[in-house]
Length: 398
Length: 203
View 1 (cartoon, rainbow over the protein chains, first blue to last red):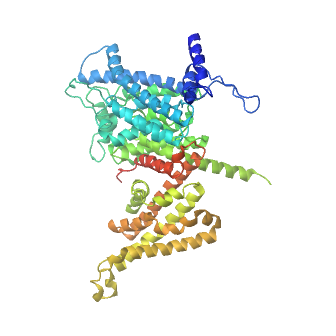
View 2 (view 1 turned 90 degrees about the horizontal axis):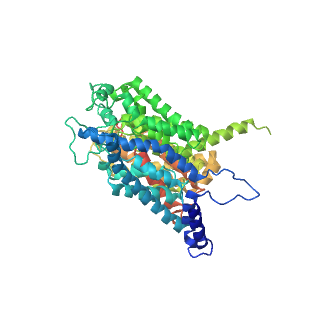
């Protein structure tokens, strides 16, 4: 560590006030705090900061929580590749193929995003925002493995500039930055991110019975089709035996975005976030509860086979778990008040199932449900605060 | 049941702001505070809920070709539909005048904060737009009322959400060039993306 310390100490005079590269002070600080705790101490008066857990440490906790999803996602990309092409393969081959597809997406997302971030913080003289560390990993995890790299770059630039920097940088955005990137691609280049793009095939030809349809697409195909087979039967009767079995989907061994398939890995991530106090358990629980209750309501209504699908299936198909754990809990865009968090999470779950079942245009609802509730989160907070004020005023005696 | 469907559809799916971009001027200008936005939103719901059915009656019994036949057989060939725009505007302006007087009497504070935008509801394109869409789609009077109220609710939802977002953004360090309207335009665009979740839902 000594040489790092020396390196930063040597650079320091150049970037301090009056130094030759004064402009790049924020860049210097940004890199220095990755390896060392900031050397700032709080003054003798006023509030005292004793904990070294600053924004950067918090962001790293989130990244650690995402690593199970990432590793599993890499393996799964390889696994789906060999499954679809009908080749027997070893564990290491699967991981290699997965890494070959996933790592470039991560590199592009980080390089482009941090590049934009650095340009902005030099021009606007604000400290380097640690926020992108998380966003930069979230973006690859919500993309299909087959996404063209230039689209990742374009979406990242759009999300960072329009979704975040225009609002004044980290902590000021109103919509989740990674979801803005995905929504941008979804509406601008729909062919690369919808339909049967979820399995990486490469040059190899798929096996005869292969179908790239995700569980959501299979379930949605029963809508408007009276006399269709029940969704669960359709899922059990898929092209590869047992791939859409409930517990198999819970483990996440199925096609989907890189990081979103495994509910189990998302729950491990959730445990890390909740235990370290970074993510709000209220939101996570509320999203799952909202989705389940909407699923139950639909079971009662039962107009088509998708509505009749057992409610717990909504938990494991699509990206509900990933969205609930890593996207909905984003402290910047979620509701800030405690009561608000319950309402916010519950409505996300509810809307997700509503969009899945009712909107034929979008088989997956979690992305748009979270974006929509991001828009309404400040309003929820406003009313929670107003109600609180009213209650306390009633208690007051003159 | 049909009326309920139209109500939900016009509030969320065919939202005046995010699906048709109507009524943008007051949407952008009066969205600085939640309380004011609620006031204006309520006024717009009221005006829409009254003018759309009244315009429906006007259209069906006076303006359409042959609509005047209730006056006598000699009126059957008269077609006054070229007067549609001017009649609708006149009715809307009259109703807005009424709303203005009511608000001034009932809540002087709201009247002050709405300022010029209260009389400007008269030329809010969302309101004329709702009346014109109503004709195009051949609604019955019940459906027309539901449509007017639904459009108003959708518009209010949009402006109140935007106001809450803008209240939160007061503390942000926004680039100078984007302060005010520039950023509001961007937010509207992003809100439009979020509202796309409803567009395409078939009820």
